[in-house]
Length: 561
Image (cartoon, rainbow, N blue to C red):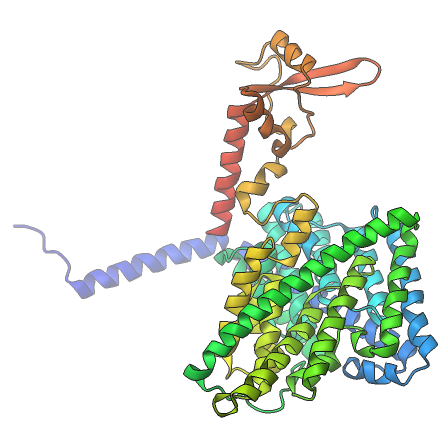
């Protein structure tokens, strides 16, 4: 007599029972370690949120002392009534202090920001420079308090990275854990800076880690919420910007206008980024031609900013007052256009002068002004089928910022959380998607990845482009006594032809030698001035490819775990 098969309900119950057993076994094996890691994420979130809060309060206190106001929202109104010589002198004094700090505590006089955190996540197991990072935070605080035209998110994100690095080093964390801790710190810092927990978590995943692995989401969300709580303990649950009224959108008729705004915003974002890079190159050229000491470069930039601020104090600081005016429709067309152009110039001067700060807040200001100008024209031409101009300002703000950051998802959410307006999502999403798609074709994905590309760090193309830079030759070459090693005579022959590689070189440097010279191995040599070249062995192409393949597999496993 054949055995009866279980019915469908019985079979389902058996599957549920087996699933529960597996779940309980998994919790017994991994539960304690996961709970411990989440607790560490909570601690990092509190520390990073606290650092972001103190950075913001530090700016307010120093501004209150220097400009006579502690409210970032009314900075340019106060500056307009100050003596012109004080408005001119403050950025110069700030630039001198910044130059001294950066040239004492950094090897290259350059401020560290989001790009360096992205590089640390990809190439350095989630670690960033600690000494240079602390100096950059101090320099950026002074810059933003004395008239520099940039944002506070860049230094805050790197400062959070310093905290994560310290914890990772104490825990001897591996690459995956180090990157997760770095993501936790960044999420908390962004959330604490902008009171935006959802966007903070997604920013860490989308911009810094550049993947949405499930294993990283829970600790990053915990840290992000912790950072938000830190912010709300001080400032409450208020949004950064308040809109004048609810946006009204004539959906099907008006959507083409937001498509056009998205394309315009993409072009404005590219203009902003390229202006910053061109100004940086021009500043380096001028510094070289005039033999200007690096310590004076921020002060020279401060002088230019001071001259502009005498006539247009709107450029000072992060620009919250002007952004709020755009979002509430309190500017006319010529003001929106002129302020946007001047802000781009001022941000370029600040960045080219190596004064410090970030680009997110300036992108918000430029975007809101761009959207407002477009909205004033659009609603003037088609008043019967148009919504409010403030809706265009909101969409433009998100579109330009998303294109600059290369982060359409987190930027869309951060715009909603900054304004508290969730009813106009369709218009913002349309503009953001087109601006990001266009800008990413004209630069290397984003402002930060283009920065890295200019330094020779190739992250924009993906892991297949940068993983070779994470492996040193000494990790995979064959010594002379190894099985199937290269003969000493063949190695010496290649050395005489100038074909060799250092043990400390990366595979990114070594791999082109194989294809260029049609070789299966390259000698590994250390050059000594007194005794000549010292042969260590040979790097075989097959060994390098094997290591590269393993690295790709590990990266794919991390991103899909």
